[in-house]
Amino acid sequence: MRKIYGIGETVFDIIFKDGSPQAAKPGGSVLNAMVSLGRTGLPVSFISEYGSDDVGSLIDKFLNDNGVNTSYAYRYDDANTSLALAFLNEKNDARYTFYKDFPEKRLNIEFPDAGKEDIVMCGSFYAVWAEIRPQFMGFIKSAEANGALILYDPNFRKSHVSEIDKLKPLIVENMKMAGIVRGSDEDFRNMFGAGNADEAWDFVKNHCNCLVYTASGEGVFVRTKSFSGRFPVKKINPVSTIGAGDNFNAGMMAAIYNNGITRDELAAMGEEKWKKVISTGVEFATEVCLSYENYIGFAFASRYFSASSDHI
Image (tube, rainbow, N blue to C red; front, side, top):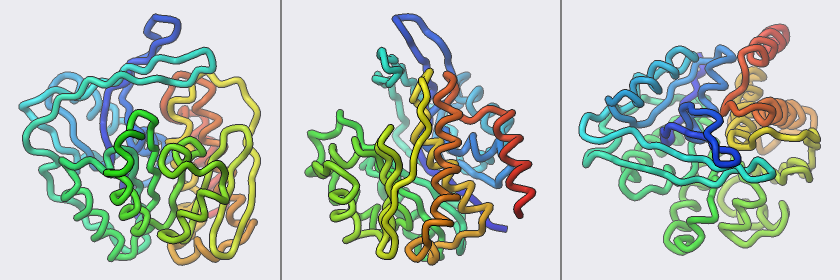
């Protein structure tokens, strides 16, 4: 059976609005996506690291309760689980302050063997972090060589722009192993100064055959060697946008999994299949923006599971 793996950072999010805490929950871009996929009943495993402290135990229980396998999570004893304070502005977009404490040994685990047509999601700073780069690359290179479909989301924050000269070669190396590069207009502006989807594609196409470019209210743009298209998003008043991109990724992966889309199909797909993939991503992202949750709700997950089961 096809499997889904995510490798990424684990933090505990505390969300503030107007100076007051509104919610506290496990977070991290890939973690958010894995929880949403776990809630839909898909076979997901999360590769990460967090402490054996009380916060880490809370996170571990939460993941397992939501259908996420944590057999590949490294639980360390000599440091505390990371915290992320998210401060929402008037548009309910978040500004972060991180409190991180890591052990000397990082990701000290035996990695799974991702096989042909398994799906692997990676991204954010975790995918270019020097301290774990050897372990990360070992897993991703093996997965790519075995024929897994890799989704890479650089999720490149403005705070790292000053490091772009050092990080750009690592970002490019990640793109070369990916079946899909998914990034926002802000990501590509921060990384390469790209002002639109075509400018982003001019760079990405040299390294990866498939780009999904999200541009907030302007829509979602898909660029491959054989297809160029734009898909609409829903107009809403968001409560929080913290998990929007993460859950867009989750929706895409769910559609790819449930429609049996293979790695080799991606670059040759036309509008009909891309509409299924992108519209599911938009549905997941929209659902998350309507609450302080970082993941889709149980009722939404149940409806999606029922609908997808009817079409399998």
